[in-house]
Image (cartoon, rainbow, N blue to C red; front, top):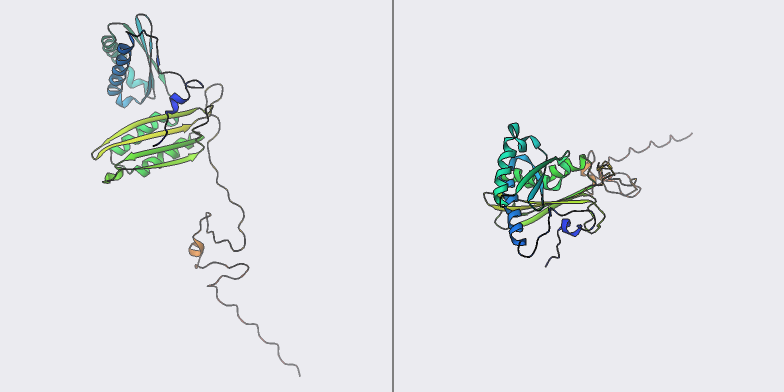
Length: 272
């Protein structure tokens, strides 16, 4: 069996923080826990189009503070703050009439947030876009925006196949066992007509003191100079002479096999 651990929980003591911040006694803990679950489900269902990456809940003696990290703060606020007032009253009922305050923080680069990348791929799969195309597009976009590495994995009845399978792509460096790496992790499910497809995304983001991404994230592939007898075609593949004009390939130190024979030199005229 696989030995898997959640990358967020794995790094809680190093560079990650809890998403529920409160302390409760043995009697209050179950109520607070189920209240947090209901609040998150309510906000996720209500703000499906607002690109909400994560929700942080803090509890004090008689108040609840909810922080929303979103890429579209305008949809969360609504016209003249009407959506905020509605969510305040609903969350207050879920938390037993406590005072509720909602904070909204904008995500400036959603292409580097693992949860938003996974949800974007899920939306494409639900629209019946090819899963390979969606995965490659997500990988390319994240690398262009400065990610040092990204890995994306989808599992389920891919393409409507009868037998479920898993496929994944990786670009750059994604060290899952290095705790000091600021690795971001996201998971979601795509509800397709032929079943659910799970999507996991890992993004390696190197941040500076100001929280900005360091490094371009571009991965350059280099290869050494071509040697005699090397059959690699243009681009470093091993397809041989099919990529050469006219076909064929050169042997070690010899002419191309399908090259026309060199014309014979004329014999010198006999001397008298």
